[in-house]
Length: 231
Ligand SMILES: Nc1ncnc2c1ncn2[C@@H]1O[C@H](COP(=O)(O)OP(=O)(O)OP(=O)(O)O)[C@@H](O)[C@H]1O
Ligand SMILES: [Mg+2]
Image (cartoon, rainbow, N blue to C red; front, side):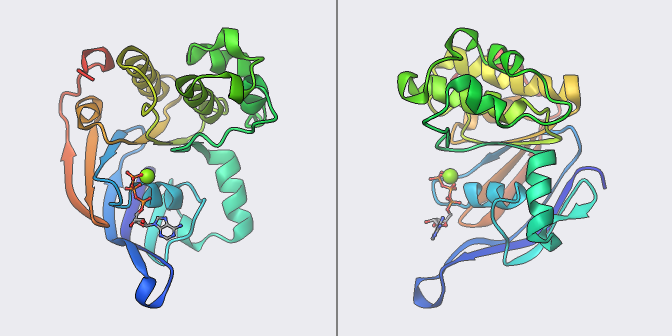
């Protein structure tokens, strides 16, 4: 299985009476190179799922095969190298290093086979902003730095948590078009979490979460171009 196969994934935060069952047995498959959108209301488990897939957090049960390996069985050391080698991650709240410039924030994510950080910044339309510190960038610009940092190493799997939340419609469309191009250019498998149900139209597959469970998996036979999305 060269894509992703998640089976019966569970995640519980806390314990006892305070326990929150964030994932209640989630199962789905994503083919390699597929562009997938994950929808669902606030608190439905989207970030939790992405964190587990990205090796940032551990599931409590179930399996997650990613490119043929069950990441839920990985040791801490294996998770580190998985994150470093295979995963690009766009955090919901950017997580930029405040004491590094935009360019340096992108540069720290480079590894062998990466593109130049200037190329990544250019792809997100920030060539002119590389020397700015995050505090001197708008929210949308910071978000685009976070995207540049995630794509610079040409990851096999790119996981994006609300990558267009702070962007206006025009910039958002450009970023979605960029994310779609990664499949064409590098064969990247892209998973995008969003509140914007309209983005589902550009996806090959749409997974809807509700209260920690998969409510629906839909396949779009004819996804539309990012530029056609009404934001
Ligand atoms: N670190 C944590 N400790 C305890 N509970 C948590 C933690 N992180 C998330 N939760 C809970 O798990 C559930 C799922 O949260 P999650 O962040 O995955 O939702 P989400 O779908 O990403 O929501 P949003 O759209 O608001 O970002 C929520 O009930 C949330 O309160
Ligand atoms: Mg979230």
